[in-house]
Image (tube, rainbow, N blue to C red; front, side, top):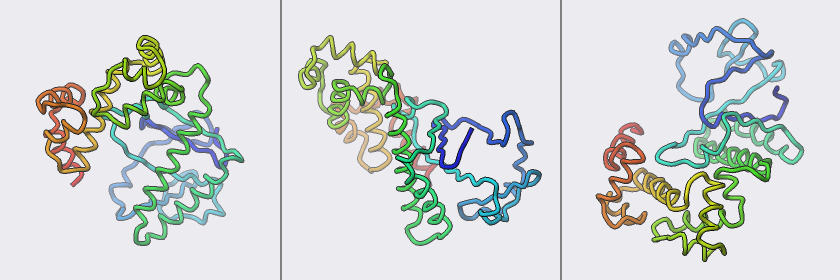
Amino acid sequence: QLFAGDVVMFPHGDAHVVSSTPGIRGKGDLSWVSSEKIDQLPLRLTYNGQNVSRSASPERSADATIVCGFLGCDLQPFNPLIASLPRLLHLRASDDDAWIAQFTQQAVAESHARRPGGEAMLARMSEMMFVNAVRRYADQLPTQSTGWLAGLRDRFVGRALALMHEHPARDWTIDELGQRVGLSRSSLHERFAQLMGLPPMQYLAQWRMQAAARLLLETRASVAAIALEVGYESEAAFARAFKRLVGKPPATWRRERDNWIT
């Protein structure tokens, strides 16, 4: 049940229904979308109980106003944050986060204004709202929780994660990580695997692929240069590891993503 100021997220993109009463299902007729000329967002819709129209009614006369948005991210090759979030994330409105309601209203106003730089501003505002939602969810996690967010919160595992994130190309060993965080080799391995669900070195290998994917998308560096950047001395070894995780060689993956973006 939603109340004014609540935030609901579907981190894994699940289909969902918003209704005034549990169990209600609409016809799901979206044929009108293809006939509409949607040249700019936001798309404002009005539902009067029977029909949907694009002629937005004044917000003051509406029984409820719902602001929806979409924040895209890559799940491959490795996205531990999204994997650690539930299918549905419902954050109740609270006095401590009253700014979210005002922030949302500002985002809506910015999207309607369509001023120069508006898209960049909305992108940053969306990211801030997402980070705040994840932070609120992490703060509510029980003490005995497991997963990536729980690992970040742990004194020892969180420090090991920070080291690997900061220097993914370094030739880390469990012994060195243990020395840096203040645990024995066996204790760190056990604690890391218990919280994260995989051993430290396997996590490092997957994180390197995520770092490599970002470089493939955001730079024009060669595959060989990127391999060295993330800790692989051999381009062939890097390509095999990337294909094993993503399903495609890095050059092919980059080319397909470039074509999709353009």
